[in-house]
Image (cartoon, rainbow, N blue to C red):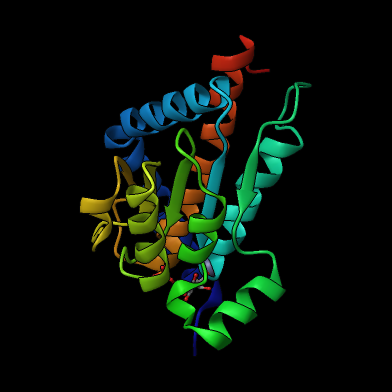
Length: 195
Ligand SMILES: O=C(CO)[C@@H](O)[C@H](O)[C@H](O)[C@H](O)COP(=O)(O)O
Ligand SMILES: [Zn+2]
């Protein structure tokens, strides 16, 4: 019989372990990414965020915190998740291919001075890679959230934040933390306080 307590405990342990490892080796990349975001916002740029499945949810989570607020009262910051407009996504998916659902939006909305942030736990989702490629072609600064494998994101991201795991859920749990860290550090850099 399955011992559900054991299963849940093992997943929690593994999540904690991956986060502990990330705290040891990943925080400098997070600070660099927060610097880039704060700098882009200060200069009038915006961030375009995209990913699939749970990473689409992470993209929307980040955009929501930036546009609305995180913990502090502060002015709205310009962020757009490219995962939310079903008319755009179905039209591109239907007429061209699902691989282009984010890249076409980057081509339409991305401007020099903006940041493109792709989220992929495998680093190999074609629509995320094509969008980062399109962003590079348009002169945007590119950033990625990925896992241990990194896939094609290594060569396409100016800053790449990697969660040290090969398991999608564990990687996503680190990405959730990174989303909140980015919001906290951007607030601190732009508005001088974090709580
Ligand atoms: O949330 C999960 C699994 O935890 C899934 O929805 C997962 O995000 C989807 O399978 C994605 O399509 C995976 O894409 P990627 O992270 O490899 O780019
Ligand atoms: Zn998930």
